[in-house]
Image (tube, one colour):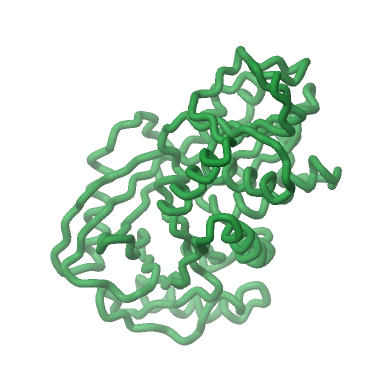
Length: 343
């Protein structure tokens, strides 16, 4: 039987970032990937410290921002690529009162570093009230990040391209088929709803659609946000998305969601555009908007890392290190993220 330090189940942001922690620490592991397109893989990959509806920030925002450059520098050491795209988020104001609210919030201690007071007038999209720029925001090159990381994992014999079979896991002996492990980390997103070890964790699937579009005129070089995000992709294409739907549980493309996106783009972009593709997936969200991290109450070698929600890059990168340090260095988890809050 082959012995490894870790098994990871799932290859979205949680699984890939935790795999990086193991690579960095020279741990042996196998990561199971069922080749289903995850919400992570079609996400915008926007790293934005401001909640753009209310112009405020979130728990540990600066810590997550600071760690982002660290982890991607580490990843660059073995992929030879930096996946951080140096584009700022700009939020189109709906009305004059939003601009006033932005200015007020920019005076607050926790927001002044993020809310830029030099308002913009964008040239390519409708923004009669102007737009505000979010400092320290950026995005990652999602498609190349996942493609390169999966290739790296496969080339180095970490990756197992098959669906994980729960009945084959012996939780008492820490074994799975021909693998013996010290710890197993379930990073499954919404699939954890079918995991017998964590079936009672209240993951809420949130269905999202996004578009790949061709634009007749290039927009300003930002991550443009009004109702949805608009930014450039490779080969002259553009991303526009995404929607949020807690009620539709089907995996089919919802025409109403596509129409919502089409209408949203038409609302800011007056030139011609063509929809080249539609993608759909389910985000794993939690009511308290905190990741789910920690150990199973009965089996000390079984862990969960889930509930990253819409901030997958921030939550996945930062809390992968938190979970690794918890397991390897016995550093206690903060109660806000500990899975025990649900057990």
